[in-house]
Image 1 (cartoon, rainbow, N blue to C red):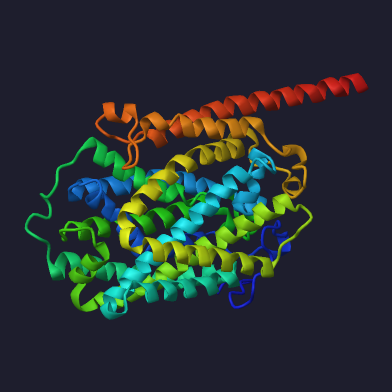
Image 2 (image 1 turned 90 degrees about the vertical axis):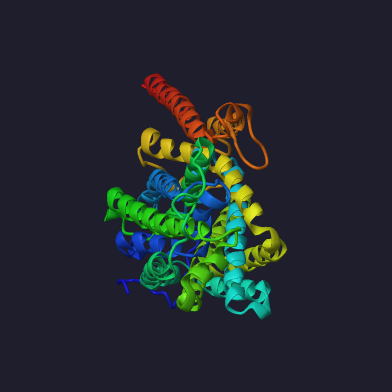
Length: 469
């Protein structure tokens, strides 16, 4: 246990800036929190989409999920490096780009995202426990995983970090055992390396899903780095987060690609149980416990986002542990309801869900990173984040809100998804280029606009000072 860490005590702070004398932990804690939380069944199922949804052969599937994770983790880790400097949750820091009220556009979107990922994890957990005990059905397993997640989220930051360190070791060993059993003990089918044909659309689709897996962590990561001492530094925080999340995601996704090529349908959890034979029960139990850790992360971040939303509307409110507990209860109930309703059509619903998230998250992450690193250079008035009028950031920052909306709209012609395929995507054989276009367009436009606004503001100050003199 790290000095200053108190996993058995209820965390009192919520969205308030973390005082310097309350900071604790080391950069390597960011490696374990993201490595340990990613080695779970949902990551395996996501990797399997390279085969079940995009119909890629093994080597192309492996390359696609690896490339997507390595690319997407850059954006995720750049967000994580903000936490030690500012000491606030990511959604509170978003007020620095969008204004106090303008940020609600993003905060509301990520709350929906957290509920969706919680529900997805609960469904997978229920399916895995059903595989262990077919007679009970998935619903009891969904409720069981939900309860485990609930208590970790209520205890808060230190408990989640501690749980993730334990699961880094336990789930890591389980993952090694699963690889060994699938490839060397159970054996691979004769057409394992020759099944399916690669296509440009399929490769880009699998890369996009893996990249989104990383980009979707962008609203989370400062929530788990904000307690680190300010002297931790951006680079250690970046690299610990980058390698923890990219390795913790890529390895189970590759396992998912392999398992998907050993089955005839899309029941990846059942296929994993079949492929791992005598150790299946132990593996599924471990991966289910890891799901509880990841769901707790979603519930905790979702609760902080809900409190951020509420404090924006009630600026004199300073929510503490009781408010976080209430928020966790509400989010748990919503996620549980969605999971029980969607359990029978999970794969189709999940694919549509994560692709839709991509289009919403891309312009936000571009604006946030450009503003932090290229416009403000990490220098923010943290006290202004908590003010009713937004302080120097105002209530609504027009350039940021406009760039966010336009950044979403420019992606539409390039979208290739089961729900909609844009005209440009059709011309390039169904390849989804939307997230690349969205990142590039939003970054450039926001940078130029924000720099112009900042320059006009500086010129106005100089004129006022000259007049005063």
